[in-house]
Length: 129
Image (cartoon, rainbow, N blue to C red; front, top):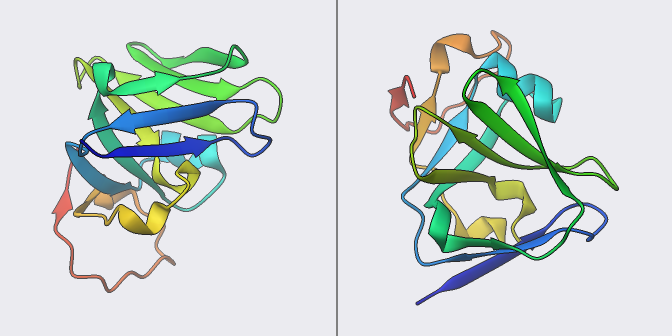
């Protein structure tokens, strides 16, 4: 079984994801843009039991009803997303993995919310969620 590791900016929070992700997407929704201060972010979706965090400086924030986002309390790096629309899943930010180049996106989510000046010509499908 493959294991992929990652960490926040300061290294206070590390994680391991065991096995292959369920999916990998670029998300364009407003909430993700605001949390990451970027025009889009890329997530790898795993089952909760596949992921282990190894630090106590990870905190949870309920960004909207039924949505929990975690972050490092030392450096502020966003770490994960969990929502009632994805029961049993934990979504990790691909940019935090030690080797993000190994996690290739498969589609776009919330493409209708993308910023009009962001032009991507990757030919990936555009999905809602």
